[in-house]
Length: 111
Image (tube, rainbow, N blue to C red):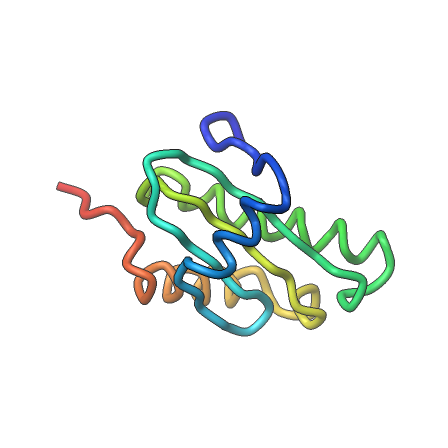
């Protein structure tokens, strides 16, 4: 998470939720807002489960994101975990994330 910063406050979250693009897939939802800053956040509500399951879901989403961090454009990213996230294989989650990034048009064109 070295080059991606954390979100400052709830207003920043609300702004990305309201104005950003979103992509729903199995296991999670991606919110993306094009920006010059590089920021990333992971959210898992109590609907996901108790603390251990929520923390595992957040760790999985962070690991997924950091596989693509060099391939994505600058912007603000929010990942919201769904309660079935921990039952889906990492490989399938990775495919979902890649498809989501393509749909949101936030992958860089690598020359």
